[in-house]
Amino acid sequence: MFRITYQVRTYLPMAQMGLEEWQQCLRKAGPIVKRIREVLKAIATGKTQGWELAQDFQQWLADEELKLERDGKPGKAVALRDPKNIAEALKGFAAGLKTTLPGACFQASDFAVSMGTKKYNKGRRDRWREMRYAYLNGLVVIDADHVGDARELFGRLKSQFDLKAEGILLVYVSASGDGLKLVFRARKEWGNLICQQYEMASRLGILDYVDDSCKDSSRLSFLTGADDVLYCDAETLFESSKK
Image 1 (cartoon, rainbow, N blue to C red):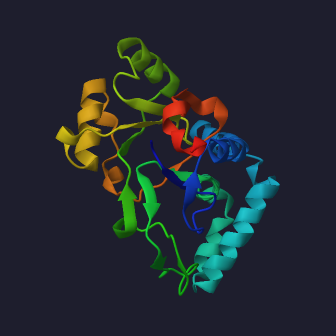
Image 2 (cartoon, one colour):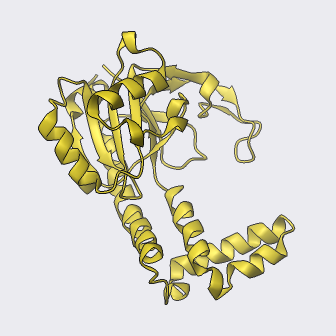
């Protein structure tokens, strides 16, 4: 039985995720991920003309300008709207969109109540996503970045390995579209979180793609839409939601 924690927004306390919450998060994430990939495609192909008229991009620009001016950086605020900097501004826009995605801590069953220390939670006691307050649940996440065609890679993995026998419970395409997230059962003999990732990635032949920064027990995995879920053993992963 696994307990998983999640956030609808990164500034909220952690909550328990069951099958119903998982499905709600997928529905919320789908349209956001679609927009992120539209932006990234425009940057990659150099087809950025006309984006300055997009309403959501305009709103993001306005919000960023206010932040920069508030931080005493009016020059950067002006540069943000310079047509020469449209690609960089769009990268910032895509990054901002990503932070609005719901996210899960697949490796943490709960977080101890603690006093908030950040701008958005200072002085409030709740279950904040802090590494030192995380309770591990026996799951591990591999964040495989820049794999090229993520769906093609998954097809190869599925044809070469019995995912269930390997202890893999979930595989989905990352928000960028060129990465995979894999959630699997930890093995005692493999050691800590990052060693677990290296061992499994080595077995699967994807070691070169592992994001080394995912050793943090409070690391948040941004979720994507239902169409991006390539494999999910929901009965095992969300068994606790039936209890």
